[in-house]
Length: 124
Image 1 (spheres, rainbow, N blue to C red):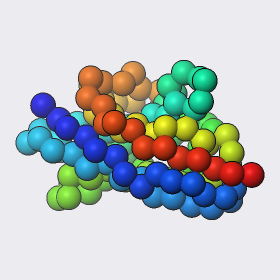
Image 2: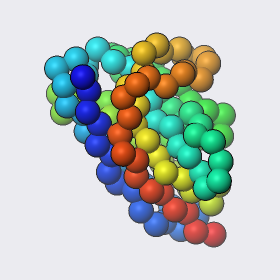
Image 3: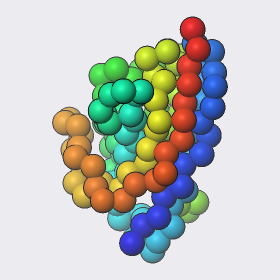
């Protein structure tokens, strides 16, 4: 069992930065690949970024490549999403997810464990 709690969302102007955190509990957290998904208003949930269990491999949606960075701290049981160069299209609720399977070159399917989400709003 893994429990996930996101934080760090907020309101920011276009071009600004935010860092999201996902604090995980559960003894098996370090064995999971982790990911961030987001759900823009009125749209389906979509993949943003993923990181494998060791932190040595990452995968990004084309829309965020070069702007967002996913990382993990296995000691702190936390996954981060550093978001730079934010755009109004990045406005969404951002969710942390523990993946069943990780891929370095295709968007992963989400696993069963989700956080409650954190709102990110980017104003123009």
